[in-house]
Image (cartoon, rainbow, N blue to C red; front, top):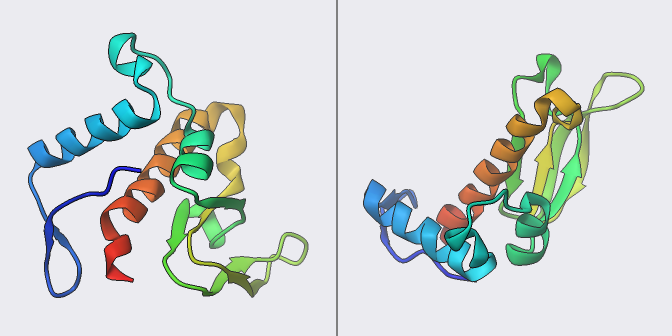
Length: 132
């Protein structure tokens, strides 16, 4: 995997430019799916997260009203989710490198948003994991 090279603020926010992010994205695509740079195609987002970034993906409701669509765990700990049966909040254990996605995005009409959210969470991992 290609690491993102930049400097970070005290709170681990990367100092970067849009151009350097574009360059980094191109390097990632070239490493993961070089054919996609020659012939534009849909990337296999599941494979990118699970096998390239080595992130575990889980589907759980993160809050009432579907306001939070995804989160990334940077450390082992717990995350509050909604119990599928009771609708009550419960804490579940998560391991570092886990992405939790709201299952409402699995509906066919939401697949574009699912792909965006998965890549968004993967980007958090790529850009901020140095904060560990």
